[in-house]
Length: 154
Image 1: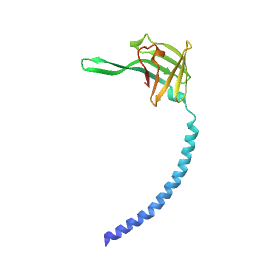
Image 2 (image 1 turned 180 degrees about the horizontal axis):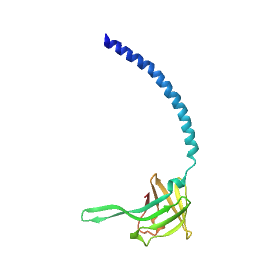
Image 3 (image 1 turned 90 degrees about the vertical axis):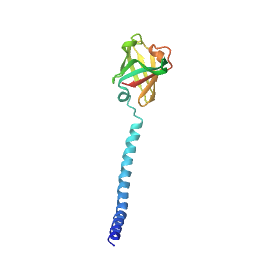
Image 4 (image 1 turned 180 degrees about the vertical axis):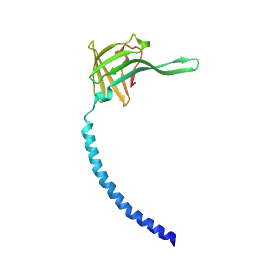
């Protein structure tokens, strides 16, 4: 009999609590989603290139070869591209690749690509691959024999 009273009391408490919890979360959810939707829609068209791209992006190419253990592959870091918040940039090859393009310039970015204009007037386009990497044509940086170059924020 004692267990039955406890079960009824629990069932009653749950029955009363459910509609109240449902109402509270419904009204909170409705007002929260309106605010969130408004904030999202106002920000969706405002891509901030400076905050996304500013920093040093290290470029590497995919390599493969044969060793005594068989076919090997990896990536070879080649150069850094440093995007400054003020729209200037610097292309600096790594120590082992000093013969590659070294220059300064300006840059502009969208959510799908970055366009570099070097001090010499050459235009280089880097394409957004995903949220953490960019790709470009290696020959634009003086690198021959590779299909693509991948940049990651370093």
